[in-house]
Image 1 (cartoon, rainbow, N blue to C red):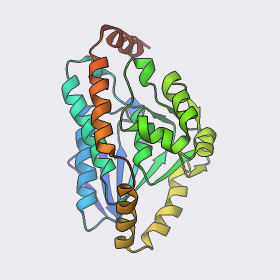
Image 2: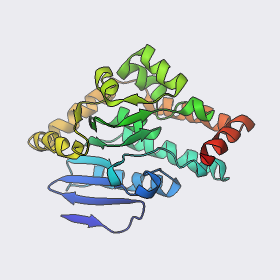
Image 3: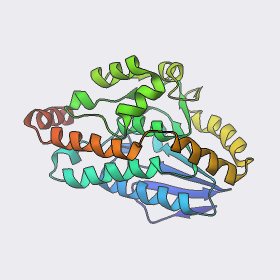
Image 4: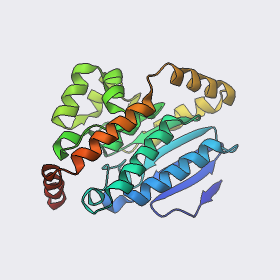
Amino acid sequence: MMESAKFTDISVRYDNRVARITINRPDKLNAIRIKTYRELISAFESADASSDCNIIVLEGAGGQFTAGNDLTDLVGGEQLQLMECVQGIFTTVANLKKVLVAVVEGVAVGIGTTILLHSDIVIASSKTKFRVPFANLGVGPEGASSVLLPQVIGQKMAREVLLTGRFFSADEAFAWGLINRISEPGKAAEVAEEYISQLLQQPLASLLKTKELMRDSQPDVIAVIENELKGFGALLETEETQARIRAFLKR
């Protein structure tokens, strides 16, 4: 087993051809700030290039997946850096060659839900709450969710959750096809190991080729990510959006 000590907001360990990346800000519900994004991008890129890794696992510390963007970055004068990081993380996960398994407990808000659209296998506990609150904050979709979410869960439900920003349950996420399995609370990682065990039995070349062919059949996801971020950035600068974000921060 190898562990990485160069990160502060995440932890990374390699064990039996599996790279386990954990978002490690439990006191903030694993909210993702600029530093976190940069560390995640580095960890994903390293794992994808590593000969010691066949499978990448993403999870959150403290029984939570992630509460999404750390909203302080949206009003702190670092919006340009944040936009670069958001584009970087989604470009990275969209281009991953290795299989990505997401282990989801607690909350999966914003990127906590949209990153699942780029994950190959998703296990969530029955108590997980999902949300894409972009409209509530006064911004637009991210991570190609304007295209991928309707593709995964259907046009009507995608419009509903994007336009209202309401929470939805693991039961709904499973029924719509956003997640593969529902576990008991606290058992998502245990169920994920069943999938990981199966995946490790497959030849790596076969997994890589399968992902490559499936990616080739998709629309130009990177172009969608870039287009969404332009809209996100423009809305982020408006007075109403800044007021909404500040109101969220006061809760």
